[in-house]
Length: 235
Image (cartoon, rainbow, N blue to C red):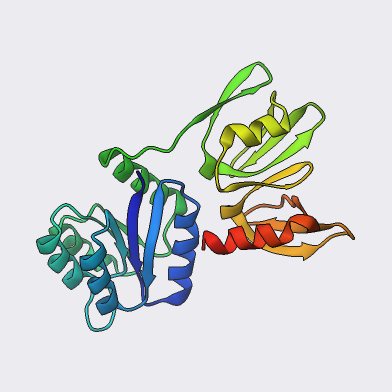
Protein backbone atom coordinates (compact mmCIF):
# COMPACT_ATOMS: atom_id res chain seq x y z
CA UNK A 1 0.00 0.00 0.00
CA UNK A 2 1.15 3.52 -0.80
CA UNK A 3 -0.15 6.85 0.44
CA UNK A 4 -2.29 8.37 -2.32
CA UNK A 5 -1.39 12.06 -2.34
CA UNK A 6 -2.65 15.23 -4.07
CA UNK A 7 -0.95 18.64 -3.85
CA UNK A 8 -1.89 22.24 -4.64
CA UNK A 9 0.15 25.44 -4.65
CA UNK A 10 -0.29 28.47 -6.89
CA UNK A 11 3.49 28.99 -7.00
CA UNK A 12 4.81 26.88 -9.87
CA UNK A 13 8.41 26.73 -8.62
CA UNK A 14 7.42 25.60 -5.13
CA UNK A 15 4.91 23.08 -6.48
CA UNK A 16 7.51 21.55 -8.82
CA UNK A 17 10.02 21.30 -5.97
CA UNK A 18 7.44 19.57 -3.77
CA UNK A 19 6.52 17.16 -6.58
CA UNK A 20 10.18 16.22 -7.07
CA UNK A 21 10.68 15.51 -3.37
CA UNK A 22 7.50 13.45 -3.10
CA UNK A 23 8.44 11.33 -6.12
CA UNK A 24 11.64 10.31 -4.35
CA UNK A 25 9.69 8.75 -1.46
CA UNK A 26 8.83 5.16 -2.29
CA UNK A 27 5.67 4.92 -0.16
CA UNK A 28 4.12 8.11 -1.60
CA UNK A 29 1.91 7.81 -4.68
CA UNK A 30 1.51 11.34 -6.08
CA UNK A 31 -1.67 10.91 -8.10
CA UNK A 32 -2.37 14.57 -8.95
CA UNK A 33 -0.87 18.02 -8.60
CA UNK A 34 -2.32 21.40 -9.55
CA UNK A 35 -1.97 25.16 -9.17
CA UNK A 36 -5.75 25.73 -9.14
CA UNK A 37 -7.61 25.45 -5.81
CA UNK A 38 -11.02 24.75 -7.39
CA UNK A 39 -9.55 22.06 -9.64
CA UNK A 40 -7.84 20.63 -6.56
CA UNK A 41 -11.10 20.42 -4.61
CA UNK A 42 -12.91 18.70 -7.46
CA UNK A 43 -10.19 16.09 -7.93
CA UNK A 44 -9.79 15.40 -4.20
CA UNK A 45 -13.52 14.77 -3.79
CA UNK A 46 -13.44 12.47 -6.82
CA UNK A 47 -10.21 10.56 -6.10
CA UNK A 48 -10.48 10.48 -2.28
CA UNK A 49 -6.74 10.37 -1.55
CA UNK A 50 -5.14 9.52 1.80
CA UNK A 51 -3.19 12.77 2.05
CA UNK A 52 -3.34 16.32 0.69
CA UNK A 53 -0.50 18.84 0.87
CA UNK A 54 -1.68 22.36 0.16
CA UNK A 55 -0.77 26.02 0.24
CA UNK A 56 -3.01 28.40 2.21
CA UNK A 57 -2.81 31.77 0.47
CA UNK A 58 -4.43 31.06 -2.93
CA UNK A 59 -7.01 32.86 -5.09
CA UNK A 60 -10.73 31.87 -5.11
CA UNK A 61 -10.51 29.17 -2.42
CA UNK A 62 -7.76 29.49 0.16
CA UNK A 63 -6.31 26.53 2.03
CA UNK A 64 -8.32 27.13 5.20
CA UNK A 65 -11.60 27.14 3.24
CA UNK A 66 -10.50 23.99 1.44
CA UNK A 67 -9.58 22.35 4.73
CA UNK A 68 -13.00 23.03 6.25
CA UNK A 69 -14.80 21.60 3.20
CA UNK A 70 -12.58 18.54 3.02
CA UNK A 71 -12.81 17.84 6.74
CA UNK A 72 -16.61 17.65 6.39
CA UNK A 73 -16.57 15.52 3.24
CA UNK A 74 -13.55 13.33 4.03
CA UNK A 75 -13.20 13.25 7.82
CA UNK A 76 -10.22 10.88 7.88
CA UNK A 77 -8.16 12.74 5.26
CA UNK A 78 -4.61 13.66 6.30
CA UNK A 79 -4.02 17.40 5.68
CA UNK A 80 -0.58 19.05 5.60
CA UNK A 81 -0.25 22.79 5.02
CA UNK A 82 2.78 24.42 3.41
CA UNK A 83 2.71 28.22 3.60
CA UNK A 84 4.83 31.34 4.06
CA UNK A 85 2.16 32.86 6.33
CA UNK A 86 2.74 31.71 9.90
CA UNK A 87 -0.26 33.67 11.16
CA UNK A 88 -2.53 30.96 9.69
CA UNK A 89 -1.22 28.29 12.04
CA UNK A 90 -4.08 28.57 14.57
CA UNK A 91 -6.70 28.27 11.80
CA UNK A 92 -4.83 25.36 10.23
CA UNK A 93 -5.07 23.30 13.39
CA UNK A 94 -8.76 24.16 13.76
CA UNK A 95 -9.34 21.87 10.76
CA UNK A 96 -7.19 19.22 12.49
CA UNK A 97 -4.28 19.48 10.07
CA UNK A 98 -1.60 16.82 10.49
CA UNK A 99 1.14 19.43 10.24
CA UNK A 100 1.95 23.00 9.26
CA UNK A 101 5.20 23.62 7.35
CA UNK A 102 6.44 27.14 6.74
CA UNK A 103 8.05 28.06 3.41
CA UNK A 104 10.76 27.58 2.46
CA UNK A 105 10.02 24.17 3.95
CA UNK A 106 12.71 21.98 5.44
CA UNK A 107 13.04 18.68 3.54
CA UNK A 108 13.93 16.65 6.63
CA UNK A 109 10.89 18.08 8.46
CA UNK A 110 8.67 17.14 5.51
CA UNK A 111 10.04 13.58 5.53
CA UNK A 112 9.50 13.31 9.29
CA UNK A 113 5.88 14.39 8.86
CA UNK A 114 5.32 11.89 6.05
CA UNK A 115 6.93 9.07 8.03
CA UNK A 116 4.61 9.82 10.96
CA UNK A 117 1.59 9.75 8.65
CA UNK A 118 2.83 6.51 7.08
CA UNK A 119 3.06 4.87 10.50
CA UNK A 120 -0.42 6.09 11.37
CA UNK A 121 -1.78 4.62 8.13
CA UNK A 122 0.29 1.47 8.64
CA UNK A 123 2.28 2.10 5.45
CA UNK A 124 5.92 1.04 5.57
CA UNK A 125 8.77 1.06 3.09
CA UNK A 126 10.74 -2.18 2.87
CA UNK A 127 14.10 -2.09 4.63
CA UNK A 128 16.98 -4.15 3.20
CA UNK A 129 19.87 -5.57 5.23
CA UNK A 130 23.24 -5.02 3.54
CA UNK A 131 26.53 -6.54 4.72
CA UNK A 132 29.32 -3.98 4.87
CA UNK A 133 32.77 -4.59 6.37
CA UNK A 134 31.45 -7.07 8.94
CA UNK A 135 28.58 -4.72 9.83
CA UNK A 136 24.94 -4.78 8.83
CA UNK A 137 23.46 -1.64 7.25
CA UNK A 138 19.75 -1.00 6.79
CA UNK A 139 18.74 0.80 3.63
CA UNK A 140 15.56 1.80 1.78
CA UNK A 141 15.12 2.18 -1.99
CA UNK A 142 14.21 5.87 -1.55
CA UNK A 143 17.66 6.54 -0.01
CA UNK A 144 19.66 5.08 -2.91
CA UNK A 145 21.24 7.33 -5.53
CA UNK A 146 23.10 4.66 -7.50
CA UNK A 147 25.17 1.48 -7.18
CA UNK A 148 28.62 0.96 -8.67
CA UNK A 149 30.41 -2.35 -9.25
CA UNK A 150 33.76 -2.36 -7.40
CA UNK A 151 35.88 -5.47 -7.84
CA UNK A 152 33.91 -8.25 -6.11
CA UNK A 153 32.04 -5.77 -3.95
CA UNK A 154 29.71 -2.90 -4.68
CA UNK A 155 29.50 0.72 -3.63
CA UNK A 156 26.04 2.01 -2.72
CA UNK A 157 25.74 5.79 -2.84
CA UNK A 158 22.85 7.12 -0.77
CA UNK A 159 21.49 10.55 0.11
CA UNK A 160 23.62 10.66 3.24
CA UNK A 161 26.32 7.96 3.03
CA UNK A 162 28.59 5.80 0.88
CA UNK A 163 28.45 2.09 1.69
CA UNK A 164 31.01 -0.47 0.53
CA UNK A 165 28.81 -3.54 0.41
CA UNK A 166 29.99 -7.15 0.63
CA UNK A 167 27.64 -8.13 -2.18
CA UNK A 168 28.23 -8.69 -5.88
CA UNK A 169 26.83 -5.90 -8.04
CA UNK A 170 24.30 -8.06 -9.92
CA UNK A 171 23.16 -9.68 -6.67
CA UNK A 172 22.33 -6.24 -5.25
CA UNK A 173 20.39 -5.21 -8.35
CA UNK A 174 18.39 -8.44 -8.06
CA UNK A 175 17.94 -7.99 -4.28
CA UNK A 176 16.39 -4.54 -4.62
CA UNK A 177 14.27 -5.73 -7.58
CA UNK A 178 12.57 -2.34 -7.84
CA UNK A 179 11.15 -0.70 -10.93
CA UNK A 180 13.15 2.35 -9.84
CA UNK A 181 16.60 0.69 -9.72
CA UNK A 182 17.79 0.39 -13.31
CA UNK A 183 21.01 -1.26 -14.48
CA UNK A 184 22.21 1.55 -16.72
CA UNK A 185 25.62 0.18 -17.67
CA UNK A 186 27.85 -2.80 -16.96
CA UNK A 187 29.05 -1.28 -13.69
CA UNK A 188 26.22 1.06 -12.69
CA UNK A 189 22.61 0.89 -11.52
CA UNK A 190 20.67 4.13 -11.03
CA UNK A 191 17.63 5.11 -8.98
CA UNK A 192 15.39 6.56 -11.69
CA UNK A 193 13.66 8.81 -9.16
CA UNK A 194 16.93 10.69 -8.58
CA UNK A 195 17.75 11.49 -12.22
CA UNK A 196 18.11 15.18 -13.03
CA UNK A 197 19.79 15.29 -16.45
CA UNK A 198 21.93 13.39 -18.97
CA UNK A 199 25.05 14.62 -20.79
CA UNK A 200 27.38 13.14 -23.42
CA UNK A 201 30.41 11.37 -21.96
CA UNK A 202 32.07 9.10 -24.51
CA UNK A 203 31.42 7.31 -27.77
CA UNK A 204 29.52 4.53 -25.97
CA UNK A 205 28.27 6.19 -22.78
CA UNK A 206 26.30 9.09 -21.34
CA UNK A 207 26.80 10.72 -17.94
CA UNK A 208 23.83 11.01 -15.57
CA UNK A 209 23.43 13.86 -13.08
CA UNK A 210 21.55 12.96 -9.90
CA UNK A 211 19.59 15.39 -7.74
CA UNK A 212 21.60 16.75 -4.83
CA UNK A 213 24.71 14.70 -5.64
CA UNK A 214 28.12 15.03 -7.30
CA UNK A 215 28.11 11.34 -8.23
CA UNK A 216 28.04 10.88 -12.02
CA UNK A 217 27.00 7.31 -12.94
CA UNK A 218 27.18 6.20 -16.56
CA UNK A 219 24.42 5.16 -18.94
CA UNK A 220 25.22 2.94 -21.90
CA UNK A 221 23.99 4.45 -25.15
CA UNK A 222 22.51 1.05 -25.96
CA UNK A 223 20.22 1.47 -22.95
CA UNK A 224 19.24 5.08 -23.63
CA UNK A 225 15.85 4.47 -25.29
CA UNK A 226 14.67 2.12 -22.55
CA UNK A 227 16.04 4.44 -19.86
CA UNK A 228 14.22 7.43 -21.37
CA UNK A 229 10.92 5.51 -21.59
CA UNK A 230 11.18 4.43 -17.94
CA UNK A 231 11.84 8.00 -16.82
CA UNK A 232 8.75 9.18 -18.73
CA UNK A 233 6.66 6.36 -17.25
CA UNK A 234 7.36 7.31 -13.64
CA UNK A 235 6.68 10.98 -14.43
